[in-house]
Length: 177
Image (cartoon, rainbow, N blue to C red; front, side):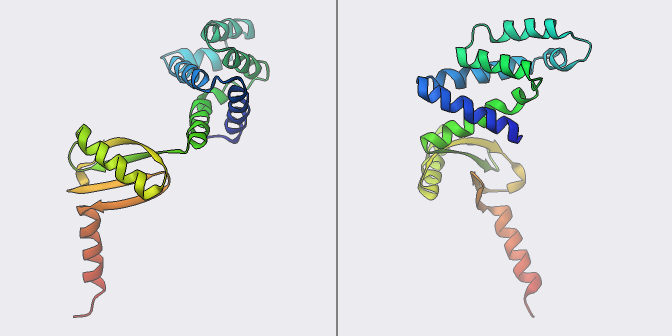
């Protein structure tokens, strides 16, 4: 994520918070991001073969039904020729939103697919361990053999069988016989 995207996201978040439109702006940014990643859309915006007027029309169409703040930001980015910021902007905005709400993202990696009850239990555990509200997603990683590995923010809690076997191997290699 670029520093420029973080700066624009910070400014947008501040304005959205003042107007009480944080959720609407976050939703519109996510939808705009999805539309910009449609086949051909990003090439249309960055291609030197497309005129500034045509690019402006496409952007106006994309941001026309969005929140006023999102539309204004797209216009500013177009005017300043910084449309590449739109790639990282939703992620940067989401980070600010989660930080403001005291939330953190996490991933529960397991050797076997997790059901909803397991994910709920792991979410509660991750919240207790981190002291924050955790938004947890599940990832299937067969190489873990068994157990669970939680990645919460930038902290790893590794309870996998693979990690236990690796530790045992290291101890055996470094022990004297």
